[in-house]
Length: 329
Image 1 (cartoon, rainbow, N blue to C red):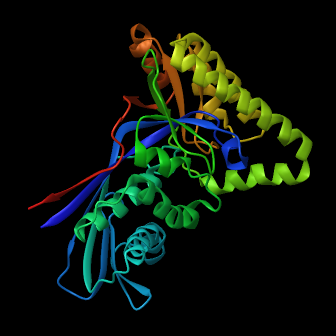
Image 2 (spheres, one colour; image 1 turned 135 degrees about the vertical axis):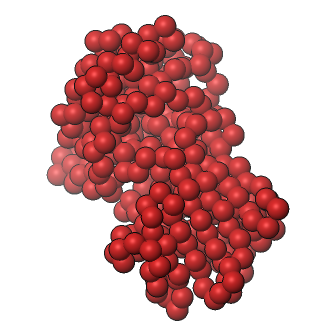
């Protein structure tokens, strides 16, 4: 018998980077998933494997014994999963003698789609299900912070919150999650530059700006907050044209603080010229992905244009369910 959970990836529609410093953000869960299976293992310790990276290891006595893959690579990839398992068990006062955790994710890594958060959230939900618990979503989201801090230095929490709850949300640190109900469902194309980067490095970059140019950052934070709040109204009233314009303005802010990339700029410009209502980077920046808001009749044209300049394309839909878990016999 195995416990299985899956959790969705995410895109940030408005407000990334600034939400670490208290501004709101609009985030959307998408139909790309991380899947985790948890079951008993025949030996002592915690056996973890990642199908996508081709690494596996056994964690015993506070150390990893690598079965497959490079030692440092295995530790980097598998430690957050171990932390997620241990946080879940500690929360319930449990220990394990032998546990097997298998990760299979279709979410590209290091490109701003929240792959680590989705894996963490799915791991927590599957571990809890294995031991007979259905954790409330707020508890899953809270437990995910330990792994996300390990990976991202000072995460805002928007990634695991979106992956846990699903849908389109208005997120602000230390505030209740607000689920948004767009009058017209927005259609997005993702363009992946293929350039991986570490989100924590860009979080630190904005933190440095806060230290060195406090007045400038406070002005940018206020501008970002107004963009997000206007975005909520645009979504809920069905004004997708205005929402696209707000995305464009948000991208200019992100470029101003130095978290864009020349390839992202190329993709964004290409998408707009091909007829996108708005386009911007999503996530940490410095590479990774951009998103384009399109009218359905322009979907193919915009996707083709981004592909022609070197982008890997994902045409995505909203995941409304968030994390889900079940038992497979």
